[in-house]
Length: 210
Image 1: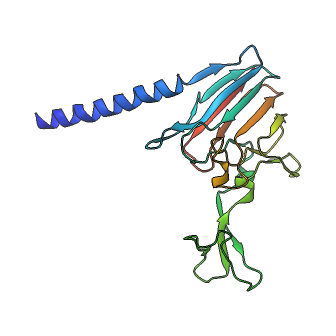
Image 2: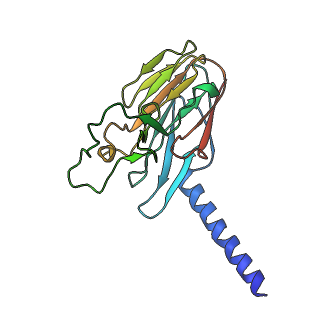
Image 3: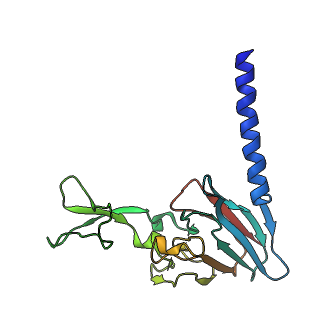
């Protein structure tokens, strides 16, 4: 009997979370609007609970239409919108980099509780990958093109990698200087385009272009 009560309690909690998610996200699939622009939330939640999902996480649009992602979370929880169209071009979030001099690593924020993370032999620093943090495109010829924050990019479908950079809620981007608030892509070629958040790799979405 107690086992059944516990099981029912877990089910009720899961059901409540599911209902809350539906209330916050309004479903999972959206079609292109008449204004040729569809908006997608990258993350959601409040000060006590962050939701790592895109809403809607499946979008259907027509060729020539656009999708804009934004981060509505109440706290500075970063997300990216990253299209990895060639697995060889995927950017890892954190990467070791060799240290070429002994000048030392000093935090830019005075009196902050921070220290550079080094490899055990102290010959490399573990750092956030610029190509995960900043907006960037890698095309079919491996040409790397940096984008501005809050970029509006036209995707041809031949790219290997398209990344929004870190998206923070408006007004909180100063938490991670260099972060943006929105990312817009206009899709020119029909097909199915999957994407993910490099900060939360289990957070995925897709855009189907007719």
